[in-house]
Image (tube, rainbow, N blue to C red; front, side, top):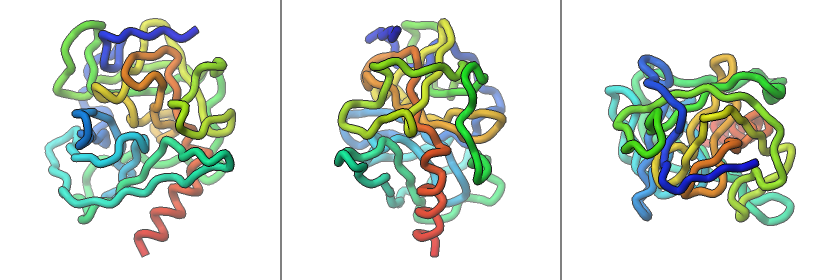
Amino acid sequence: MRKTRSIEKRIVGSSACKKDRQYHVQIQAVQGGKVCGGALLNTRWLITASHCVKVQLGLNNDVSLGTKFFSFLKGNSKNGKPHDIMLIKLNEDMPGKIPVISLPSQDCKRPELKSKVEIGGMGSKKAGNKLESSVRCASTEISACGENDKPDSKYQSDESTTMCAHKPGVEACHVSKGDAGSAVEYDGLLYGIIVSDPVDKCADPIVMMDICYYKQWIEDTMKKESA
């Protein structure tokens, strides 16, 4: 069963990340004051949700990002809907030692049910607190998706593209205050991007795009656009 709380705009049930998730990118949307998360894949590319378009970028460490970038959205599906996933190519390479998160192996499979995964966002560890100035981290577990657990209705969603996670007391809150687009870690690798609907409230289960499904598109896009 989905729970939503309109007063919470952050990862709920979280704690300080400390030295973790330094690949995390804060994305400030130009339109509507929206905030999203994202993740650096390498010194030139980052990944987020595609509803975080027209953005300004900032990192979860002391390195500054260039102001110029190009975005690449996953094209329309067979039913004509776009996918809620986006790659952003920076105009300049970041320093070589900058923290990044790696993709799974070529034959990757989504984590099995009840597998522990790590999430993060600009959150507080208690509901109702103000948005934190640093990234917060939490653990949750892969779960089965319910009928209503899916991305916003304007985006493509089916069993092959979407996965879910649930843990009592842990929720992700979305486009208004910073959790949508954030990375889902499993065994230290990128396995998901948070895209839960409704976009302006908090949700449990947490809905994610399955990176294994999009891995070939990610690699092909970065290779093509880096040539």
